Amino acid sequence: MKKHRVHRKQTHHRVVGTVRGGANSSSYIVVVRSWMFLVAFAMMLGLGAMLGNFINANLYQSTPQVAGASTSQ
Image 1 (spheres, one colour):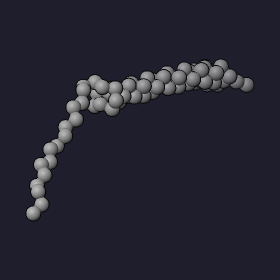
Image 2 (cartoon, one colour):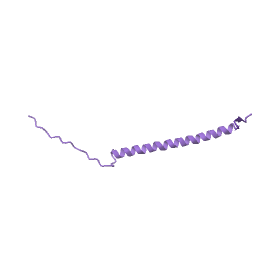
Image 3 (cartoon, helix red, strand yellow):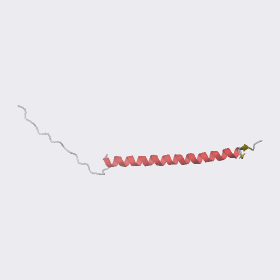
Image 4 (cartoon, helix red, strand yellow):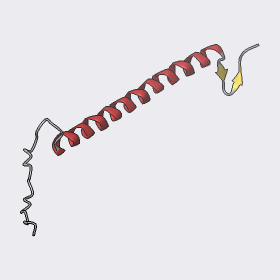
């Protein structure tokens, strides 16, 4: 008859805050990525607003209007 072997489960102890793939470092990466996305989004909005104001100012400069009526001849 075959002998029964005792199987012991090996546990790996993970140190909190480790550099190598710990739960802490992955949440840190998620936070950094979300802040980078937020900053990039805000910069794009600001750039769009400045570009829109510049185009709007140049449009009104070429075709001035007085009280809703065009002054061009």
